[in-house]
Length: 223
Image 1 (cartoon, one colour):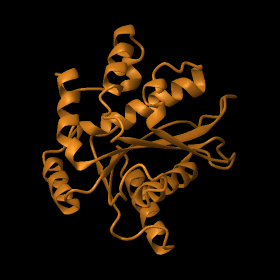
Image 2: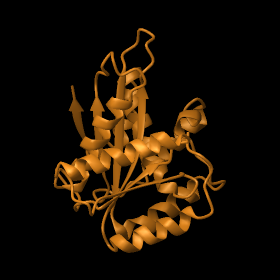
Image 3: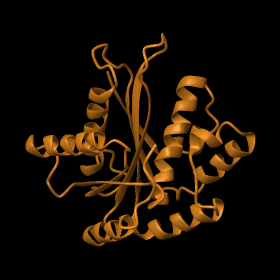
Image 4: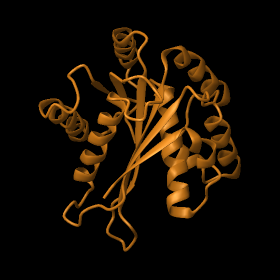
């Protein structure tokens, strides 16, 4: 869960959007299970790549469907009406302009108690994939917006992942990673929806939500 939206985040977002001009932006969220409770441990992150001409119209579509301005897919899926609303939100994707990229670490090492190392591997692979437009369905991405974490050390860890990729030459330093609250950028609802839909398919064998974006999605599996 992210902290409440800060008053300055909208200005920070505006500055970064102006910097990338007409470039595509990747919005990133995650779903995972890392508890040692006998169930499979996994870590998944999804990026939804949105083209510049679609950014404002897509945000308006989301706001029209959620007029109170608050959405959290996990909580909404506990209600029948919430599941139907999630389906409507997934249908806002503009085919074929929007692209989803999912990185799925199908196993988490026993020594990785809280999933931090899995997160690093998944985030690094995802940033590399969208920055280099590996699947050829969107332009190269120079700005990734991720949900801000409540714990500062987790946000610092994500920045260290980006720094490591740059030092190893896997991405250029033009690739920016920005952490904000979904309250400041409702387009972060999109990867939250995609992650939840993927989890529903993976854990509960319910495919109806993921079917809405399946044709737009590329899945990269890590061992």
